[in-house]
Image (cartoon, rainbow, N blue to C red; front, side, top):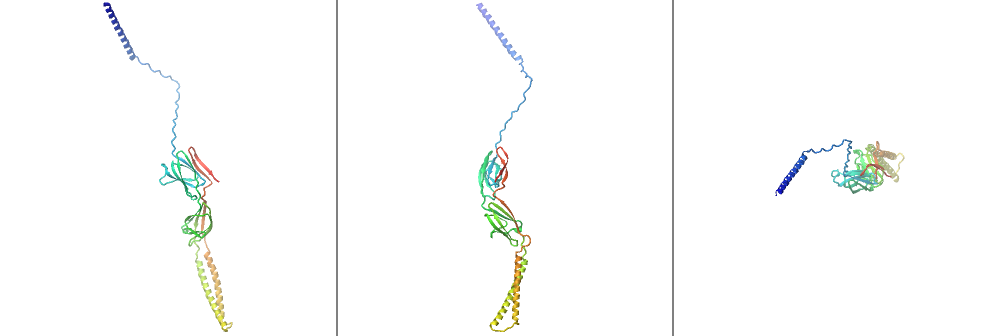
Length: 341
């Protein structure tokens, strides 16, 4: 009993000492873990460093905001107009149109729906709607038809020439200033105005031509000399008629005496009077003829500067045979040329 008890005592004491030693070891290890300084990080080795290479950043291309309209035509030189119908950002005021210029046309327009029109005096009305897409080229073939006649325009150079009447082949056409569409052909043009020198000349009109006349009418020659000679001629004619009547009366008187078997000799005064009246009448007729011719000369004579008309002719059927126009596409910009025969 005693030995067992001692043994237990000794065993218990042994256990307590072992526990104390474990606790001391744990406490020492715990203290060391907090008191020992942490190991320093390794320093980098000094050596050559590679240079920094920037990486390019690709910026996406902006979305296109316009489209290209390319129009070809055999109506070379006809002017084209674009009218916005459904174009949100046309850049035009309400009611305003875009002048695209003479065909062929390469133009940049805002995307949307446009109405194209030909505005040229040599062609009949033509229009077509087209849709322009942003970033794309819209191609179109425009073929307006020529007018059937020719334009005839007359303009007055000065105010004195305004109001003159224009006749074609004797028929009244218009009063200056005027502009008329006439059929092709050959005409005789006459321009007249009171107290102005008349103007007449031939004129040939061709289809789709434009003939412009700048008219200058000069003051007509004074008719005072013709008036004077005309009055004188009338007086001489009257005198000739009177003396003719007197001579005829004398002749009849002598003839009546002969029928009644009357007697008269060569010294009868009626013979000399009748002969004298006949001579005076003949002289007056001759004078009247001369004065009449002089009166006609004064009536037809035109002194000074004659009336004139300066003619300008051009064909409306097309422009020049060669032309340079801007060419703008999706990836090119430059000039394009055309040569037509």
